[in-house]
Image 1 (cartoon, rainbow, N blue to C red):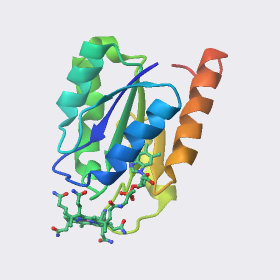
Image 2: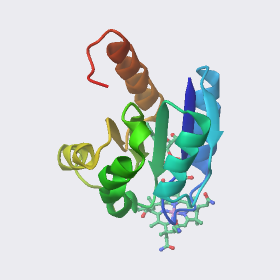
Image 3: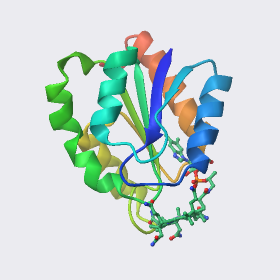
Image 4: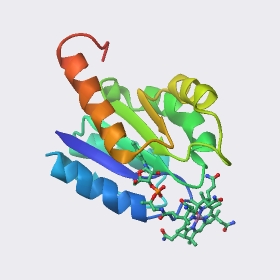
Length: 141
Ligand code: B12
């Protein structure tokens, strides 16, 4: 399965991005890594170009809170991306934040899986579970 990944916005934190690339590869995904400082449009362009089924975005400096709001309108522009599984993780706000508030907010932005300050392997397990449920007909994607 193809995954596009990268760090959204003007965010230069690169260490997590490298680990995510390696971890996804170790789990058998074909990875297209756009690296740091990636705009939302570039993620969607790459998803179209590669035919990826998953978009896995990181935010470490918390800027995704601003960028995330554009997801729904961009998804409407890129009409063929209805089935794209949208995952986001890292530090999803500035400061510590509260996952009970942050998760619904990002789901409302259009993300399927939201991992605020969640360990990478736990997040990748959540992705696998989501895919399994979808393939079994339990998810609406
Ligand atoms: C190293 C570092 C830097 C380096 C980055 C070097 C580089 N090129 O990578 C430098 C010094 C340049 C830097 C700069 C800044 N930083 Co800095 N930085 C850090 C630091 C100390 C470590 C980050 C790191 O590499 N961790 C190691 C990796 C492995 O862990 P991680 O990034 O947390 O990623 C893990 C998880 O988040 C998770 N994860 C990440 N993405 C995803 C996605 C999914 C789907 C899932 C499931 C999991 C997941 O898995 C990863 C692996 O375990 C953190 C504090 C900290 N202790 O975490 C601050 C921190 C991230 N930085 C911070 C800030 C504010 C900045 C600056 C804005 C500071 C400034 N005022 O200039 C700038 C950012 C500039 C920019 N344009 O982005 C804040 C962010 C605060 C927030 N979100 O509220 C932090 C948290 C420090 C703090 N406590 O305030 N930083």
